[in-house]
Amino acid sequence: MNRLIQNVISKLSSNPKHIFLVLLPFLLLYIILIISGLKDGLRKDEWRYVYYAQQLLRGEYAPSHVAFLWNGPGYPLFLAPFLAVGMPLVVLKIFNGFFLYFSLVYFYKSLSIFFPARYCLWMTLGLGSYWPAYEMLPYLMTEPFIIFLISSLLWFIINLLQSKTTSKTTLTAVALLLAWTALTKVIFGYVILTALLILILCLFIKRNTAMIAAGKALLLSLMFCLPYLVYTYHISGKIFYWSNAGGMQLYWMSSPYKGEFGDWINFTSPVSKYEEVNEVFRSRHGEIIGALYDYPNLFETLNQEDLISKSNIYQDDGFKKYALNNIKNHPAKFLTNWLANISRMLFGVPYSYKTLNLKFLKYAIPNLPLIIIILFGLRRCVAGKQPLPYSLILLVVFSFIYLGGSSLLSAYPRQFYIIIPILAFWVAFILAPYTGTSELKDPFY
Image (tube, rainbow, N blue to C red; front, top):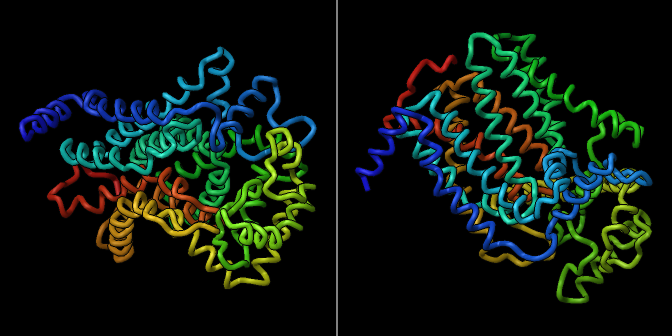
């Protein structure tokens, strides 16, 4: 076994392109997981992404009669060409395996800028073994696609910011990836804007080539998003309007009631097997949801057409109004929900109206040591004991802005693990001094 590893490392040292072959077992594993998880019909949010892709093929996005904007067009833009030529959905799901596979390739390539082949390989194998990221492989969901975009972004940002000169091609690639990420997960639109404002403030204090290049990339990415933002302004009359799903998330996040922890609750299905619990839920939310959705009978399934016709800007604004009232009147409960949100994002618990079970170990086992390492590295960085490259500092700040924003809405484990390539890259720097690993070259701090 040791000889095999030595041969692999030797080949990688002589030709980094061998990483494509080395990581093929992961691709095989991903495809097996996809095929074994296949079931008939569309599950989770799959119908919505397919619906929007079909809308794009019709020459529109939101239905012409209502502003149904529950997510951005990033993933539907990917799906649309394949649906246009009649590609089976099962084949589109196989792409998820390739997304995670090429994420590992980009991660390895990014590490190889700083570290020897042996260390890069072990860290990449560690990332590939991070099983929470396997969760959405059998589904037409955005998570594998976003992980690929984040890993690609990692590689291109390092190449952009670690260079003494700014490459226009690399700058454009970073901006495009940022824009596509924002159009896929709309919260990144707000993250980009926040990061840009912070960077502008920092430029008044200190400026260098890396910070200026990062600012250009962030600004250009927002310009690439302008066609979508102009479109949403046209149908909503609101500036910088990305989605109308946020109001309902904020409403559940602000819930002042005992036993509700800020997670999104599906009001079309019973929340408990006990009818008295369902009655409590109806008494808490039935009047509000009934007024906003013209849907007084909770737990009666809404079909796709009903949901689309009832979900628009009016409901979004209404939920936000109730949410802000809840936050104002019950700030302590909102803080409790916020802490529960962070716990759910990291460990998969707690959920409203659900009893605790051992499923949370699926997330806790890999995430707990990861969080401990990150907190240790953060302490060292703040103390000035471990300087980091400009690219990694900016990526970490970007990640923290994203995680902070995600914690204010209904949060889930998938909102944490999509950013894992950046966090794992940081972990590589944290652990390097303790593994006898040194950088191959001056990382341009």
